[in-house]
Amino acid sequence: TELRIAVLGVGMMGAFHVDALTKRIRGAKVTVISDYFPEKAKEVADAIGARVVDDPIEAINDAEVDAVLIASPGAVHDVQVNACLDAGKPVLCEKPLTTDIASSRVIVEKEKSLGKELIQVGFMRRFDPEYVALHQLIVSGGLGNPLMVHCTHRNPAVPDHFNSEFMIRDSVVHEVDVTRFLLGEEIVSVQVIKGVATSAAPAGTNDPMLVVFETESGRIVTDEIYVRTGVAYEVRTEVVGEQGSATIGLDQNLQVKRTDGSWGGQITPGFVERFGQAYDIELQRWVDAAKQGTIDGPGAWDGYAAVAVCEAGVKAVRSGRKEYVQLAGIALPVEEEPIPDI
Ligand code: ISE
Image 1: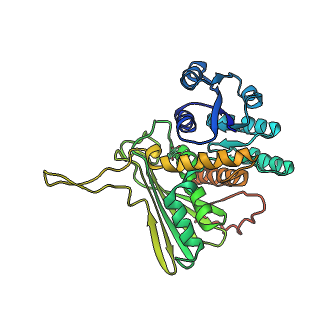
Image 2 (image 1 turned 180 degrees about the vertical axis):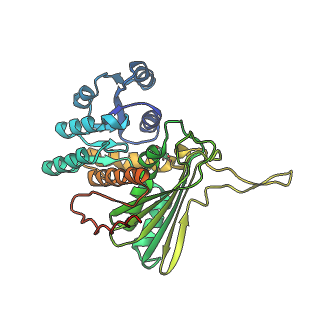
Image 3 (image 1 turned 135 degrees about the vertical axis):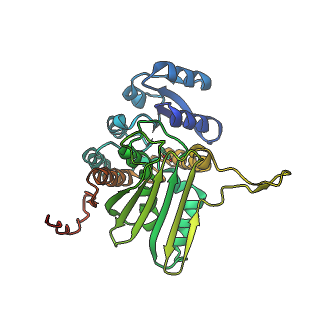
């Protein structure tokens, strides 16, 4: 039998997921589309023979919906995820889980009280074959004790509303999850180092930035976030261990030698191309799990932890200092003595 899915929000990601669920994912059927813009919903729904339900909560509770995919703006995730829990329906929610720590925490507790996992959060890198291989290498002991992680996250271009804080919540959030996935521990502090900004950035936006995480056990993770390179989509991660290091994200280039003597290749233009396979694997596994009433991937706690780390990251952008992550059950390191003014 097919899993009948409501897709909430059919902007770029939502429409991309509808296409995958319709053409490439087995055992799934998008039956209901909901979007803040009814014309947009109608256009996507008409193309695949789905129904439009304007109110997202009605869409979740629709009798022809077994599971929900949320790709709406982050600000409405809280209400929509809660409605999925109330309806007892599995949900794949694009990041962020919610836009503040408290509401994410409430969702974690509420799901716990239901006694089953219904929430999966759309951190697709965990399904990317390269990241899976890197994770395997680490957990199998192939690098010895992993000591440091160095990440590079570059986008060719973004709209002007991508200010420094938005870059943390929307882009760096992926390295937050990658860190937790690869190292299997929480991030306890965040520091943001701002340097010279590209002239492509609007005034006041620090692009690029160097973000530094510290984990529970004291490991250091660096992340260069640069979203206006004007080049292409580049995501690299290097793990440095006691017995070697490993890097992913270097081999996406097809090396071509041309008749004019030039050589080189092409870098994927955007994240949909770079992580296309990861999205498909993510969706297939979610669909298969949702049929069993469960999830198969990062869950509510992972969504909550990511929100908490990004909150500390945003504070760190503003303060210029190391900021500690407020996460339930994780003890805060003793605050360092402030340096006295002279
Ligand atoms: C975007 O929202 C994503 O999720 C992409 O993976 C990331 O590379 C980009 O920076 C974000 O804005």
